[in-house]
Image 1: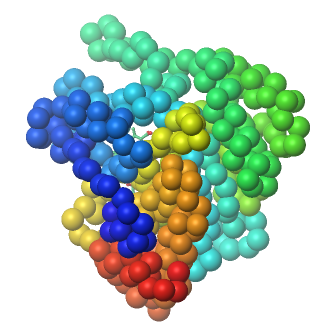
Image 2: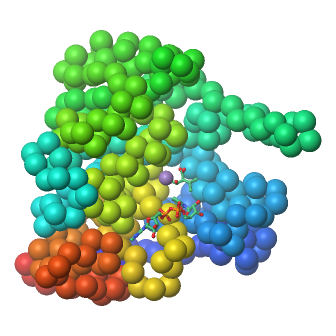
Image 3: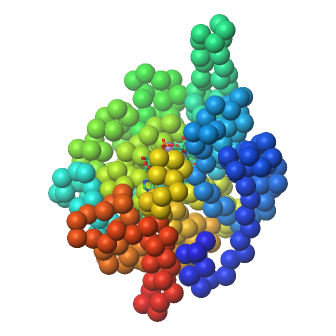
Length: 340
Ligand code: NAD
Ligand code: IPM
Ligand code: MN
């Protein structure tokens, strides 16, 4: 919010509790008032939910993840999760990969967000708890709509989609591949190839530069996006947009970092705020049709890094170690100054 205010544009902010804070306050991680407020808004900014204090709550449907984050995504129909991962120029050395041309990354994971094994039923215990059941279901229309979004995004980029699945084992993946193959034939201006998810996990490390758009289902996208983040240097850098259908030229979206609540470093001022800040840039780009505003925020982030400011996760010798708040202030300051 500090960074958005610093852009000089005017926003009406309202806040609502979700996750553990909402559970502590009223006994439910997703209060009806919070969901209503999200529905009435043009866009939602979400702070990560979850933490060890809430991991044992019974039933699990009252926990922050299953009781708040997933229902928010499905209730708001946020089926298209856009997770860009890009090597930032000042952070070339922050990647644990040896830096050569092939290890630069500039890709987008298009993750299906409201289907698959995260949502399908039954999800239950049987045999007095000795057997656990999760179900994975995909419907043709769910694959079609996320693939359509991937084609749109690919057209603004290098026009290459790698569709990632496990079609050698899973029936849902065979449907996924069938539908994506049909759609590829109808969209000949975009190059579409298929890759098995285990190979993709390996290729991301071997030569990340080969990827433009990775189109994949819910759980594979969850895992591959965390992997892709580390190639850029830190999970603390990766933003995400969770988008619904376009209505009257407007895209409703929820914007949040890819990372979680980082309980191991909570309260120490060590968390990198850049993932959250870049998520506000995605909000301007997708929900407010303000690409220029988005670029200003992205440039401000790069300026702060160019000036040598680093939170602990991306710290290198010779740089200036700053706290979460100091990094946020430095980025906001650059937006207020005339230069950007
Ligand atoms: P996590 O993403 O919170 O943290 C993983 C590791 O990355 C930790 O070592 C953490 O310190 C580090 N990290 C994460 N964000 C960082 C940042 N901004 N700057 C520096 N380092 C950062 O994942 P986890 O530890 O597996 O999960 C913790 C909790 O967060 C769990 O309860 C989980 O369910 C929840 N979670 C929530 C979301 C969400 O709300 N969208 C996403 C992922 C995990
Ligand atoms: C994410 C998170 C969530 C997910 C969890 C917290 C439910 O890991 O947004 O990537 O798996 O989708
Ligand atoms: Mn995740």
